[in-house]
Image (cartoon, rainbow, N blue to C red; front, side, top):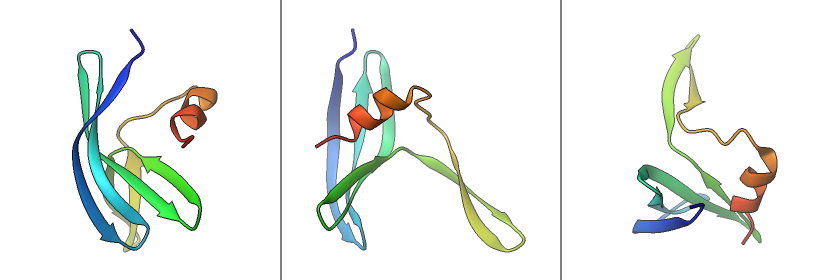
Length: 77
């Protein structure tokens, strides 16, 4: 089953961040997803891990959707 459900919505207004939520996909729950908006553009960021290189803050993906068509379909509003 390819059904995804949104749960645990928490509205947050900070810069482009609108809120956080969880995604339930079958038996898997992905916590810490973020919905962003800038102007008319909206996008989803999945959870990431923060790390530092040379004193600069970087982020590494924790969850990845390797199929780009599926990734962009999830970001259509």
